[in-house]
Image (cartoon, rainbow, N blue to C red; front, side, top):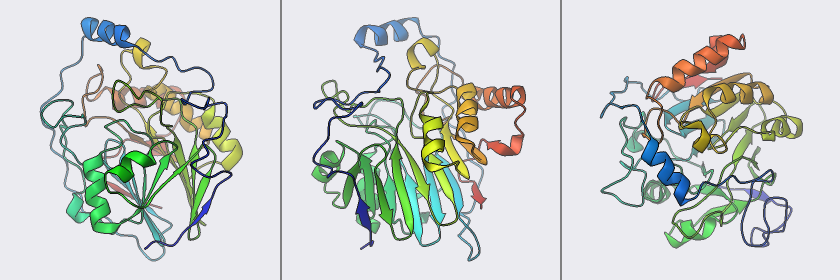
Length: 328
């Protein structure tokens, strides 16, 4: 069993009142801008989504192991799933291996790319961090499989532990924004994001959402989960320092009138990179599930255009291949 020390300002069952919790529901402090059923109908009625291919083949990458003198290895699996191999600690972010991201196995967004690293090829996992409860980030079937194999610590924002425990996942700890969990010599902090939550039509914003900062003695990695652009990136840098690596969403952003409050577009991802002061950023949340109206290749091309406009070198913000590893 993974040894750990939990460092919290309040027990996770307290759910203290705050600028993002009113005693019943969670909120974005600067406004939720939630789209209702009529706005969803308006989007779908007027949508002109780009066509996506049914399948895109991955390049074949072998998993790069952590070398003895390495500070860490970051491997992009796909969508928002990364494998982080750190000295003495292995982390998965928002692991999703299911064919569809939906409450139904027979309908809903279907993956066009297989995961870049198979479940069977994963090394032993110590920790899973989950950003929020949407189906493309909290995949219960995947979590149960990994829990059965490795029994990792699963870290979730407030309000999410009960669902996972009801599915038989035992080692779950939930935390609030700016709270952290210390695992050996490493600290994992939940930080704010501009988003929302729901698994059904009746539980909107009953659970919290967030990003994470992972701090080892040698490396800082920021995981952006799902988020709109906001001042929280500057807050993260102010409180926790600039990350060595930032994993930032660049897809699922069109149409802007519908998506802008909860999903960054590539230009906003570039600004988030600058706000964080990240030494290097990696794009994610693109090209796996057709969740919005932009084309499958548009996030990468728009990111390159924004980087050029902001005079950012290509090496500073990379769009990784599925299964590609990066050594620090």
